[in-house]
Amino acid sequence: MIDILAITTPFFIIIFIGSFSCKMGWFTQEHGQTLARFAFFVVLPPFMFLSITSSPITASINVSFVFQYEISTIIIFFTAFIIARKFFSLSNSDPAMFALNASYPNYGYIGIPLCILAFGHKAAIPMALILVADTVVLLTLTAVSEAQSNSSSLQRSLKNVALSMGRNPLLLSVLLGFSALTFGITLPKTPILLLEILAGAAAPTALFALGVTLIGQSISSVKNELGLLIVLKLAIHPILTALIFLSWSMIGFSKLDVVWIKVAILFSCLPIAANVFALSQFYKAYSGISAAAIMGSTIIASITVPLTLFFLKNLG
Image (tube, rainbow, N blue to C red; front, side, top):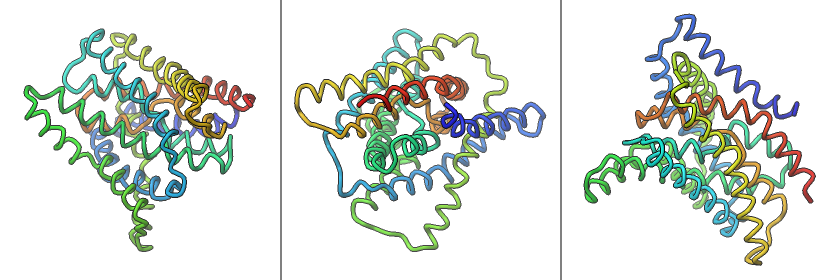
């Protein structure tokens, strides 16, 4: 528990500083939106690019592992998308953002340090595989769902999908990073240093902007949406992931190292990623509720994640 809190406490403090600064009048909601755009367009892409290019996956791409994890991600995404439309009557880009909230774990700021702490160097390859595959899948699903929700015809829908994916810097940075990793492209020292400097600002900027946005948000009218998002992300997602990996193993399709399975389950039980807030600002949809969901899921995860980790550490 102490180790988990040591990782998540700075996360909360930066969000609190953002909210406090807004309360004091030092920053306004408009400033928060500007900071979110800065995070999304300037500092998060280098962070994603470096995260992927530093991943040790080229020699150990396990298609079965990636496939099993992504089945879980895709099921959660589309289940949440349907619920958002049918039960909460969300429209336009909101269902896509609701689905992203339900399925996008906080790998970078919480998951990676936590897995290294729990499982050591053996966790590096499965973490990298999930980071790359899940980011590509989720950003693509969001772009496609958002574009189709705002289109009236198939031709216009396909055009909007292409435009949405082409103007998404996070998705482009992931694809560039994966291409560089696949083809063994190494950047010179100076560009790498520039990217590292920019990437270092990603977490504090995104979290501070999130804190600013939380001020003035009324959640009483959307508490059912928030509650379901948190349940989907912190409970249903890891349970589904565990069931898929267990079923796959029992059928006999593949035998995975138990550490890989534990990493998959731990990653799926993480709270909602701060990147979701930046994406919600980019798509101009569901940003206030996304901010509240990220904060709420992270608070509750400070209890549920240690419990999951305790279970995994004592499992085989």
